[in-house]
Image (tube, rainbow, N blue to C red; front, side, top):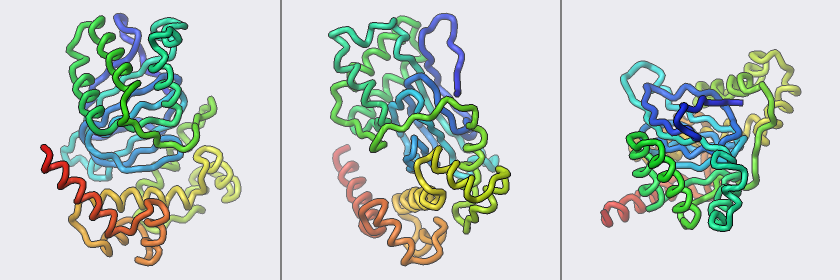
Length: 291
């Protein structure tokens, strides 16, 4: 279980973070986490959900939901790239055992309960919360606390929240995070090529059958399904960039042929790649026209 230390003048953690790449392993903790990925590219793991990280990615993650943010490989090759994030950690009782059960906090209490599914924060709510987060570290402690309460009250009535999990997903209280993180790092480094389950099972000194049970216990998915989701996530990012043909994206994402790519892409997104790209470009054009 991951834990960050509190500063002497604070009841919750508020950090702006800038680095060459994100280096935290797969982890979980008892605190709620409000996390803004302000600048980077990569993959986001929330419970059993895999998706690409987009700029201004903003999430409210409930307690004990395992998560991992991983940059694309360019960030780990000393190319001078920057990954920037802001995050807040707070516990259910950081303002006292009963604070979030006060009548005035009913809506906020429901928001915190909903965060058990991981909440993606979009639209105008994203812009509002991002601005508050970026202001907080310059504030004195009391005003920092007021800004956090303002964010929670604001989000409690927002229509811009989207759960990323279909059912709650909490990790057991184990010390096995290093081993499962090894699996995720292996997948992320190798998904563009053919992956053999025997190789990662050998790395963990496990039989294939034992590894398959172990992986499904931690992710609720088979190893092959998880690899496919990461490949689809990468393909979605390339389609949104618009710099590659669909055939190039197919092979750059680790699929062996176009037929296989189309079948898995439609199963996971509900669209064929061409329609996915067209829908994104149309939405981006509409957004640009409104700005």
